[in-house]
Length: 173
Figure 1: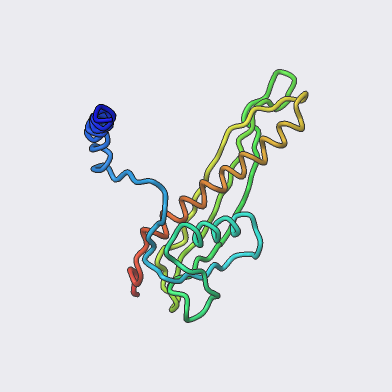
Figure 2: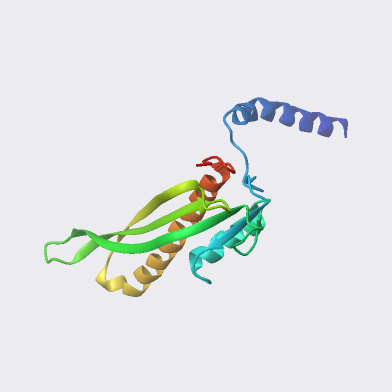
C-alpha cells in the first residue's frame, strides 16, 4: 500500500514540471468564458444555424444572459451579414472541378444600449479546401455540409473571443 502512494507521488512530481510552462502561456481549458456584459441581445434572423449555435454557446459557456433588445441589454450583437460561398480552386484537363474552396464570411458589430459601437463593423472569413469526385457525389455533399458546420463553429468561437475582449463604454463618443 505504501509503495502505491509513493508511485502516485512520483507521478505527480514528474507531471508538475511538465505542466508548469502551460500556466505561463495563457493556456486554459474551455469552460465558462467571462464576458464584460451580464446581459446581451442578439439581433439576427431567428432560428439560423449560426444564431442557434451562438446563443447556445453564450448560454452554456459564459456568465452572460441573453435578453430581448432594449434597456436590459448591456450589449447588442448585430449580425450584418453571413455569406457562404463555394469557388472552384483547380480543374482537371477535361475542365472538371477537382478542388473547391468553401468559405463563410460573417460581418457583425457590438453596440451598447445608446448605440455606441463597442466593436465596430468587423468581418471574419473562414475557409476550407475540399476535393471533388464525380464518382462520390453523395459523400462529397455530406463532406460539404460537415465543413460548413465546422466553419460555423469556428466563427462562433472567434465572435465570442471578440465579444470577450470588448469593454463596456470603451468607445464613449
